[in-house]
Length: 453
Image (tube, rainbow, N blue to C red):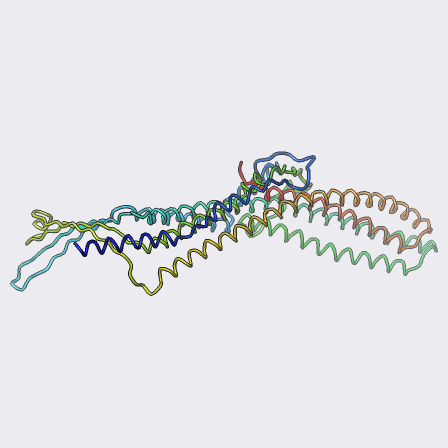
């Protein structure tokens, strides 16, 4: 009786000490509270539309097909999917610990007098989850699966956005190349004009050298832009899981498509649907559950085991014809493990704290991404307005200088300078338009839009 009372006292003391020392900080609750700031974004949107998915931003059938192909064949995304599948297998494994474990055995031996002896046994054991330690372990596995599922959603959205932006980049490189080719044609035409003026006694051969220098520079630029176009196609191909692709695969990529400006609502609504924040939140929950498991390793464990055995001179006689059964219950409590259990608790606490700070970093990055994208929309609009005005002025100036140079009223350097400025401004307009459309995709991604509604 004294022994039983002593064991009971040890168990109670372990329970009290374990529960009393468990961390009372709930980082997951703080993470949810940090979303509800009561503030709004610092920029009003006048032409934005409410959208529910990234693909709504660029309603182009060919782009949708490219996104579907990328979701099926992108190697990085497939690895993320495998990680999710692995976590779900671990979840199944953790759930198995809740169930009784059963095993059976059949063996045979020969005694000294030459008799054969066969033995059969059936063993069943079950750990009673009195402290919900196994339940916490299962919860940790489930939250890890939810975190990985959210990470997969984030990877899918990022991939879809990258495909759309790569599509825009191909269009940009084609347009820049076409502008430079027109610039070269203008410069080559100016060489013919210079020769005609020289034969008429209105110019010098030094003007021809100057024009040829500009033409050679333009040809060098064309070589660079052709490489950039090929490289942009290869970048898009990699996203699709291909090694290369031709322009025929993206035949519609000749003009910039319309990209809708997504509507930003309240920060807590926009940020709450971001999958990377969801992944970080569920990682906190998983680590909190693992922390509970670490604390409860200090508590006694209660298990029940039973066995059924029999033996005989033949396998048939050993198959439980006259079995012997036994039933055993046991309580196991840790006494001394060199501080390992306390160290595991500390590690679990640090894992939870680390995931909390990871969530905070993700949250700060999310807020910064949304606000930066909103600010850039206004910036690009203003830049395009002023650059378009400058381009229109440059076009008029180029027409004037072209006429004046043909009449011998202007210098070749002035004419070439205006020509270069005009085509440079046209290329800047293309790049600004690309940047604005790409930024709208970034904004949709920052607002938590996914590949499906």
